[in-house]
View 1: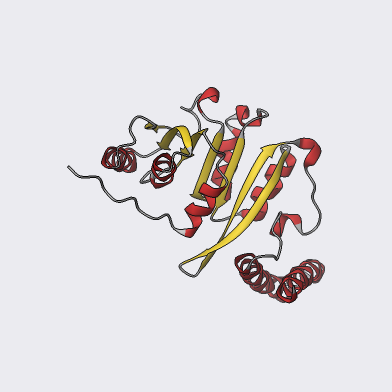
View 2: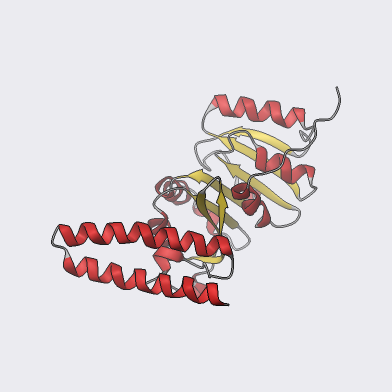
Length: 234
């Protein structure tokens, strides 16, 4: 059987891949088809990887893909509820991508070993993003890098975090934009869409008589728009 040509990762997973350290040991939690660990293994970027999922069906597909791309010496599968079946010495870089922020909080809360000094978290939340950023700060995780990416007209953000309580820095904007700047077009588009969604929320506050909440949110919206517009001019 001939070799299968390597697939191209979408923008979301490609951004996650860019935050993985060279020659690290990786755990991809909720791996689905195992595309991320397979791609990293084929590129020679990881020394070992675990493709983990809580569902046997996707894990079976992941196993088939691992064999198809002949990376079984590097990538293994693991049936696991979050990080429950992953040992602390098996993964230095931990990817949680394509799931809700609340689920990420549950997974990380149940695995206190992720606070070890050399561990890194690569997080791509789909929902509850401000709540996730707040959780990270409260637990002593600093966001070391954050970047947005557009894929199929959706805007996603990816965070690289590590347990560094002394480096945690938050302000009024932090829950909304974290460490995003306005230097890239995708970051600016993410901020524009975020501001539009927050404007809807502020109008809802106003309609329901929560004027103070509306005013506070409008102040945040103004700052986000200011950052975005400044980035456009640079």
